[in-house]
Amino acid sequence: MSTNEEQQEQPPRADSPTVDEERPPGAGEVAEHEIVKMEDVITIDPETTEVDLNHGRIGKIENLEPLTKLERLYLRWNLIKKIENLDHLTSLLELELYDNQITELENLDNLVNLEMLDVSFNRLSQIKNLSALTNLRKLFLCANRISLIENLDHFSGLTMLELGDNKIRRIENLDNLSSLTHLYLGKNKITKIENLDKLVKLECLSLQCNRLTKIENLDQLVNLTELYLSENGIEVIENLDQNKQLETLDLAKNRIKRIENIDHLELLEEFWMNDNGVSEWSCVDKLASNKNLATVYLERNPVASDVNYRRKLKLAVPWLQKIDATLCR
Image (cartoon, rainbow, N blue to C red):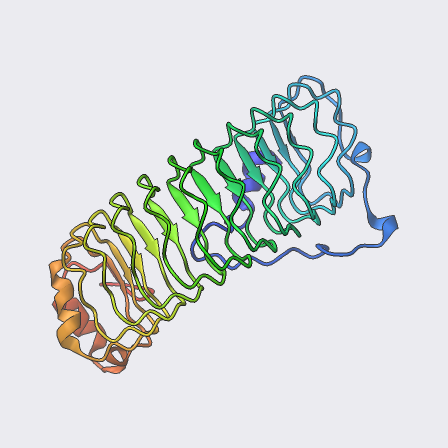
């Protein structure tokens, strides 16, 4: 199977706002005799530009020295504990080490052309030793044990940063990431939206499943098209006056009782408000101001218990194409 075909069959990346990815069988401690050596599964072709060794039960990165033209190395879902023996792969553009047993970012200094690095689902506790990777565009560190956002100042060209499912408590040290368009910080322990003013190119911000109680400090993010704030403790929809480019707004599973302060979002297409406390149809009717609205989720709000729930919602917003998970007729 080609790499492209295999990647299409794999589940979505952890940066997808709705993904709830499980590790495959075998991820974890494995008996020594079950670990595979790379030399037993790889056919050395010095001219190859891509090597795909996903699901190989490989225990160590080694024996890649002849592959000086290699541009893409995929080692997802293996048993690798250490990043090593990559110094000669200076042409490498993409390195995937997703779901292994790596505890430290190290030995990457020679990979100066690297544009994408994925070390999600490992055992990292710190972001470090990446300063040589000045061409990096996408960095995936989802599902590790990282508690601090740090050592990223040199990434002025980075466009995507995935730090979801870690132990981060504060948004900080991102000011120099002036090219960032996608920032994923879901499933952490963040209590406040802050320190994002310099990220003026940001288009997608995910802060799902944190400890937020207020929507704030988004005024400078005028290019934001997607905002994911579900599974927090937010009580009021507010402070979105400058975010007029929003197309997707996710406020599901919060403590919001009123739909308000979004009538200026003329480009809004998807509005996720399920599992909140909206009980008054009068505020639901205000969605008629959002002329591009195609999808609305309001299930498990008090209004959704109305026997005429779908009919009333469709009457309020006739152009809706989907209510909750069901297409409109």
